Length: 306
View 1: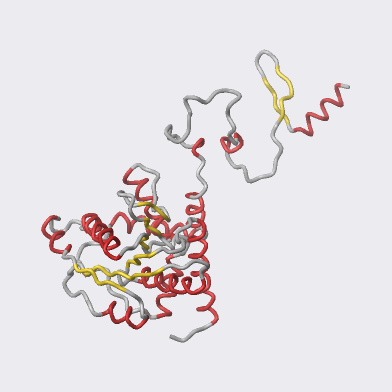
View 2: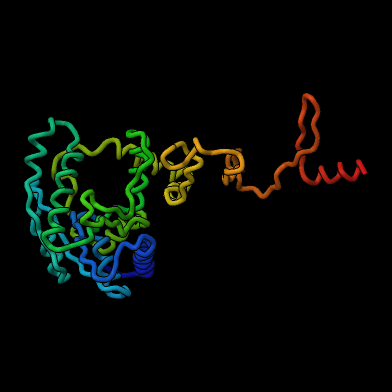
């Protein structure tokens, strides 16, 4: 790998964004033992590199245990990750679990296997975390994954739900973190190519790709080409939710809302609020008409009446 100024700027940006996400969500604390899940793809390689770099200068002490799950896919190059991790001197575990045969047995030919495979994989990861004494589990999902999941859940599940940067497992025994939550997939891909990681193909299982996710990804890519920055805006919106302007009665007490109690930004109910403009003021009324005017015109009317 030939280092360049562009590469160092990219590396710094990825580390800075990951550090900010870790700080914003208090992902890593002193004494944590983090099971870092390695698939052999660009995202997990980058996540491990970033965590190792941050570990050297973080104000807290934490341990990293890398993990790869060998699901017994035909043709899986089982020597790649052990060789890479040993070259780094990283503590690691290779976990063998034949989820591939279970998926092939349960899922009809031609159907997407991702859902069942993911569920089986998650169970193995949680158990491995317990076995190695890890209290945190790090996954390599990035900003684009989070935005895609948001639209998938909205379009196909009828829910406003994404991937949180941090969550507790169902049994409450582990915390799952996503240190790359603020990082763009394009930056990660560029970085991975520059470093020349020994990438393991993600299609060894032979399953057709998740077509719904691919359609959403293509939609977002088209949006980004037409209006650069739109995906960033969507991601920022996930961190700036206004329950009073949605329709979920479990998040906002609409039934109990009454005059004199509301503290809502009314301007946003009537369209664009990006312009600096004083609100119209009441001017006059009669039996059939009510007039509102600009404040300056109201002042002129008052002077005329005097």
